[in-house]
Image 1 (spheres, rainbow, N blue to C red):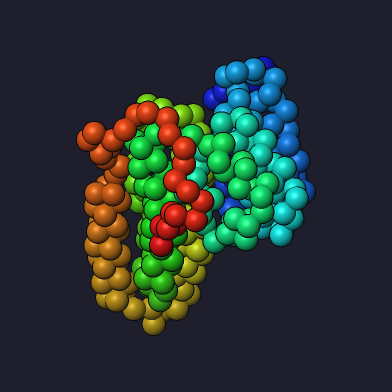
Image 2 (image 1 turned 45 degrees about the vertical axis):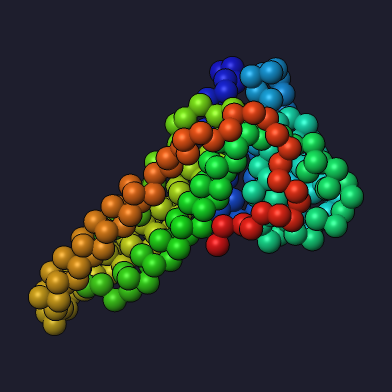
Length: 256
């Protein structure tokens, strides 16, 4: 079957979810290189997916402390359309701020005010999703009911971006959401299965508390759902649409 933009988007998402749930593997690295090659073959329509693959390879290199490889892949990503100046202010990238090669590739990026607003939101949402997942896991410790909580997600923005680099960050958020939801569900199913087994073999199981735990969990789920819906991205009126250099390197505070 011939590759399409949509099929490669799905493949990138799949690889990023695998990285988020299982960590880096030789297979995931090979998969990203394969995405770059296949996206290149698509021509101009696939250029931003080349950037997506190169970005992920650069992120992996940063995580392993491989500065030369990181700069190589990130330079290729910027050449293909990466302009995520917010990501470049996350803690793992800060040591690269002193590298002239990294400074040079950063200075080549261009973005609009409106797209920069969305980048801040996308990265903030990744942080909030991780926090929600952690809180949900803590809240579910000791639950005696057999229910399962689904981690709510804020909707991915659907506005037409001015730069295709925004699509890369959207895939990152979507993959983060999926990976965190899968991890939360796995733990919840383990707890639920254990409680179901107890209900079958142990007459001392506390049904009253289980019902109370279920109601409390439903309340928390509703609160998280409302909070996620309220976090939906809203485009700022009057946000600029002119391509501008990214804010100076070191001037952005990465979302906490």
